[in-house]
Length: 288
Image 1 (cartoon, one colour):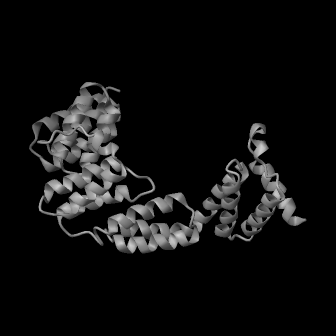
Image 2: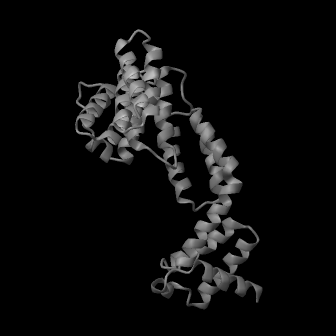
């Protein structure tokens, strides 16, 4: 009785609009699976609960309640897996890709149908087949920035693509970097198809030039993204710091404009142009 009451309560709380309620379980078999799933859910055995809700979805993909309950169970599991996930991303950040794969498989053991984990596992298996852990050179530091953007639930594949290609520029004799670039192009062919970099241009020069044209076209948010990516790879790039300061100024983000120009001035303290920029910014701030 208690189990059916819990079942009815969850259906009520998670019900879709009236038009979707036709997907509520009709068969005795589905109801039995729901009962088992909710029993595991109530006992906090979320992986087993998800297992049964997935059985329901395979039988009837329109079961809104099963989908909602899987999301709810994963949110509850996120708290207990937070430490594992933190350790996983720490290993990725340190370039220990084989160790990160082992940690990820531990995460998958608790939630084997998690699509984000499955996607990361596929990527990491391919990457760790090429590199077990990063090297110590400057080029490897750049490459690991790109790999961290790739091996991530919040992926940034365009940045990963640029970072890995920049690593190729820095260490043209390294055979691993081109293989990683090829793996990424194989996963997302649009990266290569959409690339506008001339063959004789370096990655950073291309991105700074692209940002300059975006500034001329008043596409300030796009320009900011290009320049922010450059600075992730080369934080002391004077041209990027100057231009992004100008972009922030156009966006009326005076604090970030000042910070960018001050960072540039630390690198080139005798740059009179930067001093003029900062003086003009001070004057504008006082006149507000």
